[in-house]
Amino acid sequence: MARRATGIKQLRSQNPNLLLLDAGNALTGQDLANQSHGLAIVEAMNLMGYDALALGAAELHLPLSELRAAIAQARFKVLSANVATVDGKLLVSPYAVLEVGGRRVGLLGLTGTDARNPDLTVRDPLAAAQEYVPRLAQEVDLVVVLSNAGLTINQQIAAQVPGIAVLVGGGGRTYLQQPQVINPTRTLMVQAGYEGRWLGVLQLRLDNRHVITEQQGQLWLLDRTVADDPDMVALVNRYKDRVGRPTATTVPPTPTSLPVPTTTKPQPYPSPSPGT
Amino acid sequence: MSSKTPQLFTVAGVIVVILIALLLAGGADVLFPVPTPTPRASATFTPIPTRTATPTARPIAANLVLLHTNDTLGYLDPCNV
Image (tube, rainbow over all chains, first blue to last red; front, side, top):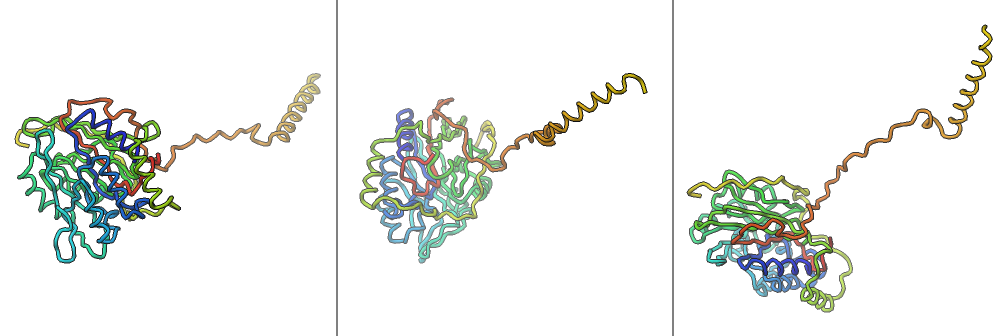
C-alpha cells in the first residue's frame, strides 16, 4: 500500500488529468483490514485520493451495518449497479459522473455474482450493464466500467454492451499485461492483478469527439525498487497500534472458483472509424 | 597362429582389465553415460508480469490517465512483492 501511494503520487505529478479507480475486492481479506471492519482500507484509499470503488465480494463480506459505516467514511464514490437490499433498492449509486480535463467521464460499478451477503442480493452484472450503460452514455463523454465479475464475464460485458470505452476488470487472480481490445465494441479492457502487487496505468489520448485515438497500458510492479510513502506507513502503523499486530493471514473472501492466473497477448488498438 | 597372436591377447586383456576397473569405479554410467535430460519449462505459471521500472517508459501525449487496481484484498502492509 505504501509503495502504491508513492507510485500514485509520482504519476499524479506527471498528469493532472487522472482518475484513480478500483474495480473492487479491496476492503477486507487481511487482519488489519478485517479487524478495522474495512475502515483501514477506506482511510488508506482516502489518503491516496481514490475516485471510485466498485463493490465486490470483499466488500459484501462485511455485515451490512459495517459496510454502510465504511461507505460513509469514503471520500470516493462507491458504486454498484447490481447490488440491492432486500427491498429491491440499490445499496449504492450505480454510477457517478466526474469531470476530468474538461471531459465528463461516467463511472459504472458492477459486482460479481460470487459476492455474498445475507442482507443483499446481487443481480446479473451483464443485465445491469445493458440497462445502465446506454443511460450513462447519454450523460457523459466517456463511459468507464469498474467490474469485478471476473475475466470471462467481463469480456462478455465488454463485447455485448456497446458504449463502454474502458472496462477496468477484477475478480480472481488474473491480470492483463497490456490492454485487451474486445471486439466488436472495441472496448479496452484492463486488469491489474491482485493483492496490490501492481498498479495499472492506462494512458489515453482522446480526440475532440472523445474517441480514443491512442492508448498505452502497463502494469507497474510495486516491488522493493518503489519507496514506501511515509504518510501511508504512518497510517498503517496507526492501525497496527489501534487493533494490534496481525496474528495470521486470513483467507481472503474471494471464492476459489475464479479464473486461474491468465495473461493475454497485447493486441493493437485499431484506428477509430468515424461515428464511433 | 601367427607370432603376433600372444601380443593381441595381451592388449585385449589389458583393455578388458581397464573396462572392468572403470565399471567397478564408476558404474555403467562411465562407459555408457546417460544423457543429461534437458530441463523442461516449468508447467507452473508464474504470474509476474514484466517488470516496469518506470510506468512512463514510452509515454504518449495522454490527455487522460486511468490508474487502476483490483482485488487488493485488504493488503495494507508495504507490498508483499
